[in-house]
Each structure stands twice: as structure tokens, then as C-alpha cells.
Image (tube, rainbow, N blue to C red; front, side):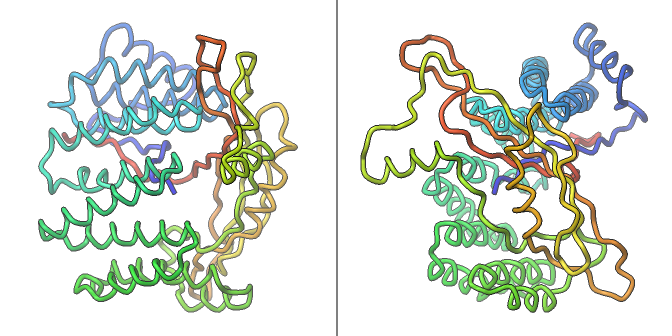
Length: 377
């Protein structure tokens, strides 16, 4: 599951830099035409691109961020965090737009900017430690992701960073679980739980969630209900996804997967006439105090949204950690963006890159402002 998030909370020494509507467009144009300090440029450009992204203008958002990266990449030494935030937003939009080569390069730029210009123990460097592995997960390369997470784990153990090492091991648990290797996932989890760091209260709760996910994958509905009640959840924290039905693959993706299994010819080759449209929807839903979801509905989307009805059903069957206590309110409301698109490629018989091939689904929580651009380096 990729960790990059596009919705950013802006913090700066100058108030009210990021605004909406016409004033935001004017602020962005001012940075383009007159130049802005790296922090302000990052804030305004990311906010402007976010507005474009939310409206479904993926290419425009990607171009906005590409231009901002080009303007600011030489400022990495003096403003590494704003520049890295630009790369991260650029990577996220590129992933949703299907520009996978750009996605990889942007993640590389994010990681290099932080690694080369900040101390190794800086929280931003630590937070970006998994960016490369998460990138490989998004690209469907589990072997490369495993190698990346293991590298982080080894380096963290060598440097005495028990927390980072533990989180890397748990990433590997998630990979094993995703590739249907419960024995491997259980073995890695046991290794993690045997370390002294497992006694840390913060890590103990993370371990509890991972253990619950492994159990939920094998449990029936009643058992999942019991597991969710057992773990509980802090009312001040965001609910954590424990279990969800798998996403249904498209017919094209299924055909390609079957052909790959038997070494057959690709049944959906990219053609010079391909010009696949982008389809997207925003689905809003409540996460109730008991961890179940309610009132899932399509809020808006591209011209046709009928293709996404199965996603409403998928969201409706998810289970999250619950909220303890007698006065638990209505729960938490969440909005997620679902993008269904092919990837950019140059088909046989053409010199022009365009989106084509089997469509893949990307999901982004639009209500999770977890990545911040700060006024510091």
C-alpha cells in the first residue's frame, strides 16, 4: 500500500499564504512570473495542483508540479523539505495519472533531496526511508519492495534505530501477507515481537494492528467483530483499516494475468490508436465507532460513474479499528479518490506516448493531511 499522500497541511511563518479560488490562481501566477522563496512556491504550487487534481484535471496538476520542481530543484540544499514535498506531490499525481516513469523519478528525487541535505536522524529522512519500497509496491514489484525494506531494516539495526527497524520488519510482514504467505508473515511478526523495542507502547499498538490484520484475513465476520472489539482504538486517532474485500480486477487485467501465467501472447497489447480516458470518482463514507462503514456513496466523478458501483460495495464491507467509550458520536467521515487508468507508454507503430493497456486502480484518502511542509529546513 503506497504511503505517499497528496493532501498537504500548510504551515508557514507567513499567515494565509495558501488560499482558494481566484486568489490561489493569482498567487501561483505570481510565483511563476516573479519568483517566490522555495517554501512559498512549494505551498502555493502544491495547493494549486491539489485543486486541479480534485477537479479531475490530472495532467494539469502534473504539469503544475513538474514546473514547480524545475523551478526549485536547485534549492534542495537550502530548502530540502519544501523541495522534497514538491517531489512527493509530483510523484503522487504522476502515479494516479499513469506516468510510471515520472513517478519513479519523482520518488527518487524526494529521497535524494532529504538524504543528501539533512542529518540521517532527521524525522523527515526517517519518514522517507520507506518511500522507495512503497514505490515498488505501487508498481507491483514485490521482490524489489522486499529488498528495499530489508535494506532499511539492516541499516536501522546497524545504527541502533530500533523503531525504524521494527517498522521495516512490519512492512515485510505486510508484503508476505499480500502474497498469501501466512507462514512467512507469522514468522516475521514473531521476530518483531521478540525484539526489545516491542515493549514500546507506540510500537506495541502497531504490532497489535498487524497481528489483527493477519488474523482477520483468516477469520469469518463474527471473528472479525470480536477482534476489532478486542483491540479498541483511541478516540483521538484515525481509524485504521483492518480488513477489506479485494478489488475486482478489470477484464483486461484478468486476461493479461492469465496469459502471463501460461506464457501466452499479451491479449491486450498497446496499440498506436489507443487513447484511454481517465475515470475517477470520490466516494464518501462514515467509519462508525464499531469499525464498520456506513452511507458509502459516490459524491462526484468523471462523466460516467457507473463503472464504480462495485467500489461502493467494497467500501461498505470494510472493517476498521473502532472507537471505545460510551459517547462515541457518529464516527469519522472519510472521502477517497479512486482513479482507474492505463499507464503511459509508446505503442508499437507510434512515437507518441499515451495512456493505454489494462486499466489499474489507484486509491487516495483525500481527508488525511499527514504530510506537512514546514517553515524549517
